[in-house]
Image 1 (tube, rainbow, N blue to C red):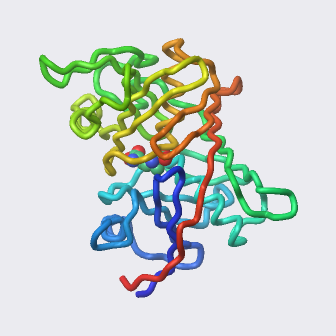
Image 2: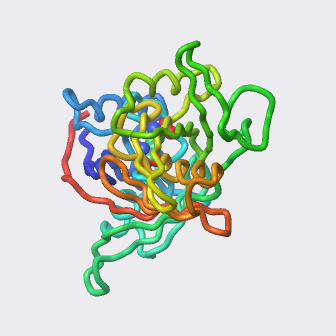
Length: 286
Ligand code: ZDP
């Protein structure tokens, strides 16, 4: 079978997108196999994840996201901006604000154009919905609590961290650090990702608060490893910083691949604004 795909990225967090509006590629186990195969940087196209564009009965369109290890994630912040740019510019949608069904609920991207004449999408502002803070909703083991803020997580007797956990539909564990550059993300990341406290594993964010409106950020992603950016992780980081009274409700998050503007608005929703870019289009025999 030949499939057309596009390679896109949001701040260097890169994805393969496949239009499945009029065709089905296969069942979940085949999609998982396909994600691993296509995302492989040596034997495949290479990407952090595979994003599928699907029809929806509840919203305008539906998105599914598979990590490079083949696991399916509930949602994807950088991926939704790529999804929004691609579907608009390829006329799969004609509205500049629309609803997308995900496993984490409905999220609403709004396109920001280069200029009014040229309908090229420069940035996308996404209503990512409300964060979930309850322990059992993240999910984390242990007796349920309304929030998980500044709790001790023990890897072993020498390594303990103070963590704040937030779900943006997918789980995030945020660690405040003094200097993100010097953190051994590849060493600590997988230990927290696979910690028994997180039955569905977790994404892990290391963040350094620079001032009330700026955060330096590195991420270890569940199912993908260290990536240049994580949209849902940036949202979770801002929420964690607000819960710990370290920043305002709107801040710029400096990720390795560039900046995102994150706003936890008074309506309780988290709004993420950032770029999305096409890298190339291609066709692959599978
Ligand atoms: O929850 C997870 O398993 C994540 N690895 C999914 C991907 C998140 C992403 N990097 C983002 O930008 O939100 C795509």
